[in-house]
Length: 230
Image 1: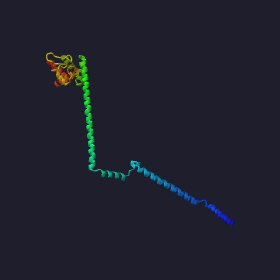
Image 2: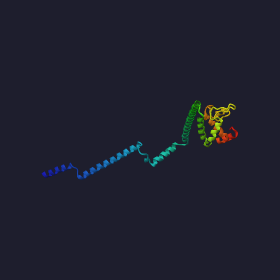
Image 3: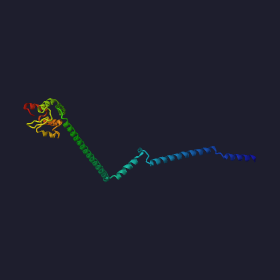
Image 4: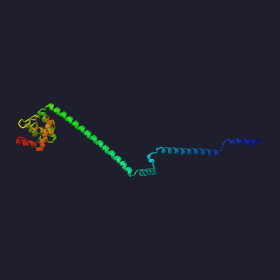
C-alpha cells in the first residue's frame, strides 16, 4: 500500500511539467504564429502606404496606366480640346500684345533719349565754336566711317578751298553756307536742325551730297579741279 501511494505522488508531481515532445510542439506553434502575424502586419503597412499615394510612380502597373489613358480619352472630346486650344491661343495673343506694347514703349523711350542726347550735344557744339583743326578731325573720322579713307586728302583739300573748314563760313554773293558750302544753307536741315552751328551735321550732309553726285571725295575733288566748283 505504501509503495502504491508513493507511485501516485510521483505521477502527480510529473504532471506539472510538460513532456518534451509536447513542449517542442507548443514552441513551434508560437513561432509560426508570430511570423504569420508579422507578415500580415507588413502587408497592412504596405497597403496603407500605397493608399496614401506614397508608392513610386515606377510601381504603376500596365493596367493602371491603361486605365489613366482610357479615362483621359473618355473625358477629352473635340469640344473640350477646342476649348483648351482657344484658351491657349488667347493667352498667346495677349502675351504678344503685351510684348509689342513693351517694345514700342522701350523704342519710344530710346528715341526720346537719343533726341535729348543729340540736343545736348548740339548745344555743346554750338557753345564750343570748334576750330578748323577740330572740324578736320571730325571730317577725317566721318569720312573713314563712310569707307573713304583713301580719299581723305581729296576731301581735306576740297573743303579747304570751299570754307577753310569753318562751320560759319558764308559766301556773301551766293549765300552758300558752312563747311561744305551748301546752297542754300538750309538744305543741311535734312541732316539736323542744328545745321547752322554743328560741324558734324554739316559734314554729314556734305558727305551725303558727295556720295549722291560724285560717288566719293576723290571724284568730287577731280570735278572741282576742272570746274572750280562741285
